[in-house]
Amino acid sequence: MEYSIGEFSRLTNLGIHTLRYYEHENLITPKRNSSNRRCYSDKDLAWTYFIKRLKDTGMPIKEIQRYAELRAEGSLTLNERMEMLTVHRESLNEQIKVLQEHMAKLDDKIDFYRQEIERTSLK
Amino acid sequence: MEYSIGEFSRLTNLGIHTLRYYEHENLITPKRNSSNRRCYSDKDLAWTYFIKRLKDTGMPIKEIQRYAELRAEGSLTLNERMEMLTVHRESLNEQIKVLQEHMAKLDDKIDFYRQEIERTSLK
DNA sequence: TCTTGACATAGAGTTTACTCTACATTGTAT
DNA sequence: ATACAATGTAGAGTAAACTCTATGTCAAGA
Image 1 (tube, rainbow over the protein chains, first blue to last red):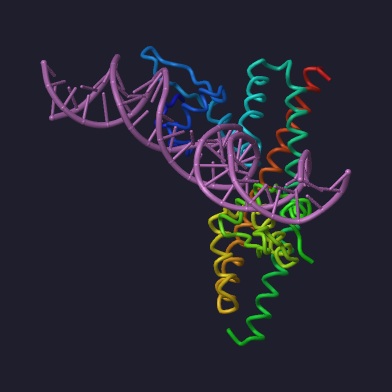
Image 2 (image 1 turned 135 degrees about the vertical axis):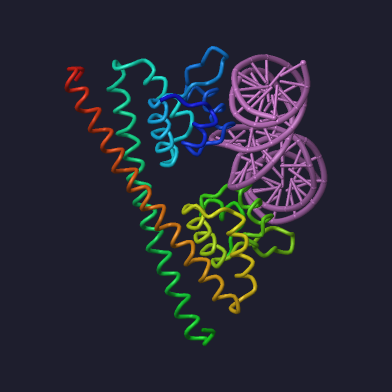
C-alpha cells in the first residue's frame, strides 16, 4: 500500500508538519509521485513506528539521524546499527532503574503525607 | 547550616544561573542576608533534591511551581499536595511500563540483527 | 470553467528549560 | 587601599523539536 501525507499522518499520529520536518532531517524519506506528492510505503510505516520507539525511549533526533544514515547504506552497516541499539538498550535499562528508584522515594513521601494528614486530622 | 549560591550550586549540581532561574520561577526561595546575598538553608537543600526528583520523573516546571505554591501555603494544602503526588505516581508507573515494553521490542530487534549478521556471515 | 481541498516549499515562530552576557556591588586577601 | 573573586539584576541568547504562516500548484467535483 501507498499513502499520501495526510493518510500517513493519521496512521502514525504524527502531524503533517512533523512528517515534513522529519523528511527535512532525513529520517523518513518517502518516494514522490508524478506530481511531486509524497508516497509513503508500508516499509516507511514500519520504519516510522521504530523511529517513534527510539524517540519515546529518549534517543535524540541527531542520533536517530545517524541510525537512518546507516540504514540507508544497507546491510554492510548491520554491525554498527546493532552496536547503537545495544548501547541504547543499556541507557534504557538505566532509565528504568532510576525511575524505579524515584518511584520508591515518591511512595515514601506519599506515605509521609498520609500519616501527616492522619495525625493532624485533616482527613 | 547556610550556604551561598556558589556552595549551594556545588551541593546540588545545579548551575548558579539555574538556581537564580528557579528562584525567578518561585521554585526555590532562599532568604537574603544583609547585603542581599542569597542564604540557602538545609531545608532549601532537601526541597531542591525533591524538585530534582520531580523533574527527573518528567514533571514540568509549571506543575512543580504549583506544588511549590501549595507548599508555601502550609499544612492546609497537605491533601492537595498528596493528590498531586498520587497522580504523578500513576504517570511514573505508566512511564516505567511503557519503557519496559520498548525494552522488550528493542531486544527483539537486537536479536534480529544478531541473526541477520550471523546469516550473512558479516560477523 | 471555477472553486475547493490536499499538497508543495521556504522560512518564521513557539515552547521549555535553561545558559549566558553586561554591568554594578560587595567581601576578602594582600 | 586596592585588586579580585563572588554575587547581584535585567535581559538576551541557545538548543531541541516541533508548529505554523505565506504563498503557490494541481487534480477533481459542482
